[in-house]
Length: 335
Ligand code: HEC
Ligand code: HEC
Image 1 (cartoon, protein in one colour):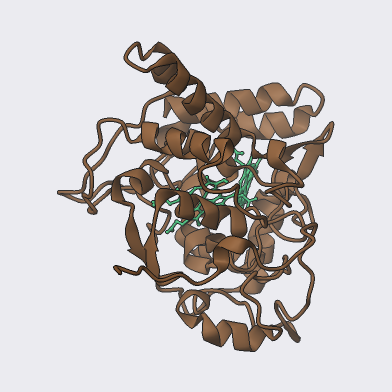
Image 2 (cartoon, protein in one colour; image 1 turned 45 degrees about the horizontal axis):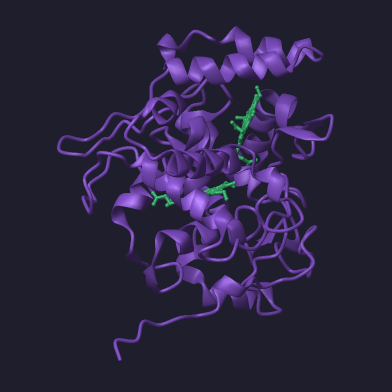
């Protein structure tokens, strides 16, 4: 809980100029009412190291420490790669909150302990670099730094260090990913009620049109839809992923405040809005949906909402291309 307070406080510090928003973030600093999901019996948990742990680790070679700290810096402020690898307003930490350390907010250390592994999304065995590349291609609406480059090395080293002391290839991990609410989208999920939840709880930070907020060119509140947001291939477009992320992490500083129903409704509402094209686009959204139905059955992409087929456009946002290199299919050859 200390971590949450720290996030809320540092956020408030950003807002000397915008007191009303700071007040909202502060007013619910009482986290005693927060009800995060608990780990199931037998599930493995791991406390990832903090920034102080990295800095004070005397066993870490100074050169490696430099690389790990650079990786952390890239994770927290990924906007420094804007225009080269990142073409929206996201930072890695926008979704992997608490420096990628927090349970129920996609902690990143499990990737380092369970990869290489087979991944259903692309149908082959992925390395840690390739997993990171996935979030660049979809969540950041961009393209990945070259494998083996300084940038990729630094990011991978940060992930690996977050796993320091954790059990390797134990897959029964508590708090991994986001899907604590389960994967069954309720039948009575409502766009209209989602819009109301959004207006009452989210618009103050994320903007009336989901456009987020920048102060002096810096992203303070990331967009939830539109060109600055994650694209149609991102994990967050899956209603169950967004619902769980929101339930456990939003509104900022007040995790667990929304009821499950409110989280489902607002996740549906957000993901019924337009965003940059899925880089796997075939030229037809319905066809792309069918081709990747295993993923898209949990999204609204290629379906008709309020009289329009979502994703039927060639807008790639700020990104000047559709398909990043790393999305090319690959199979392992043991020859
Ligand atoms: C828009 C939200 C979003 C952003 C921004 C984002 N990610 Fe992710 N990330 C996700 C989602 C969703 C998943 C899949 C979790 C799941 O399976 O439910 C994920 C999964 C991961 C995983 C695998 C975690 C595991 O449990 O194996 C890693 C590693 C990762 N992301 C790294 C990054 C990095 C590095 C960046 C920045 C370059 C980034 N992500 C940016 C949403 C995001
Ligand atoms: C007090 C301001 C605030 C409020 C209110 C708030 N958020 Fe957020 N939200 C943030 C910040 C800041 C981040 C990024 C976290 C970070 O960078 O540490 C974020 C991240 C997100 C993300 C992942 C990143 C992205 O842009 O897609 C989603 C989804 C999200 N919020 C949804 C919501 C929803 C839904 C609500 C209302 C129930 C809400 N938020 C209320 C500040 C807020």
